Image 1 (tube, rainbow, N blue to C red):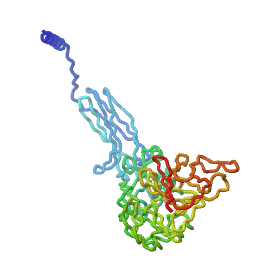
Image 2 (cartoon, helix red, strand yellow):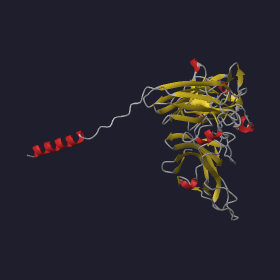
Image 3 (cartoon, helix red, strand yellow):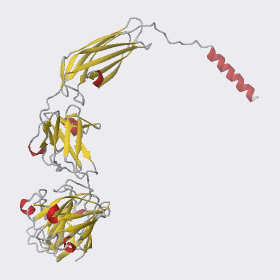
Image 4 (spheres, rainbow, N blue to C red):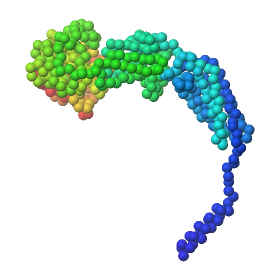
Length: 487
């Protein structure tokens, strides 16, 4: 009974729908729209000027639908699309004014024609096309080009260097840049590593080299040009073609060493040590070292005393095992101390490296000497640790705590940790628990005269006597600093 009832209801609904009047779409007659337009400019400068376009579209019988505007630069075989817009058009008449910024991009040659392609379509799908011409593009003058640091505190490439014009390209050789490097290409270089944004500057936009502005760079729309190549020991050559925007580079293929000859492989007074007086005490060079490889040290008085206690493990004779990650390092030999200093490249930052700097620290060599001041001008002033686990850093250092006339309860041993070579990325001792020595993680301490010193955030020893070689472990996971005396 229920089935019969449902069938009757379905038939009634069908009859109701069938009796409704049907609606059909209006079919318009076959007609081709009329489209025309003009370009206001006869010349534009890439990267600076805009293009003003006037367009009119009309029809008599069939309503309009859309207008597609495409702006191009170049001849047919090298045409580059630089803008495209689809505009909704209604009824039978449309007119509009449009402005398009003309970028300076790869392949946009001097005197290339700027063309505007118009496609008008009506509601029946009939199309009409027109091409607007009469404008040519000019390249901004690129007579000079400088490799510049992206920020003034970026140390990897110094203050910038002028590239040499070589035919159509700009080139620099014998750079000695690290295998991971960032830079901008500026047509004007200024002192102190600052980019002159009033003149053309090249950077990266959506993965391609483009002309950029300071506003784009500050907003993150544009970035610096980056080279990263772990197969290279260093980046020695950079070549840039200002017509095609093609950038090429070259460098030495990284080959780990199996021996270091102090007298032949390490130069006197290495230039990366900025203190000239200290540099004279060293021999040094950039050396590519492989993790867990065995390296023979030639020329040291006694390798068992000279090897770096954090980055090397003594095997026997003149042989050590390298413990750091595979990569490029500064290897410096302090002649009078007979000690090797191993440091990652100075441009590296957290989490790859951690430095300690202060008073009362020294190399754990046979005849150690403690620092009496702070600084990053030489390996005698600051000391780098090795990352032994994520966010865990190991330092093996000579430590000496003496008297401090300014304080009743504290000694002279006073230091701080940094994530950057040159004061950046400071850690505060007040955030760490000290284990193994009477060292205080300062949040600010008071002198005998009642004034407050500059020790806010420092690691400061109490009056207890401290002297010897200690292994310091800074653990950012549990926020501890642990001290273990090894000799």
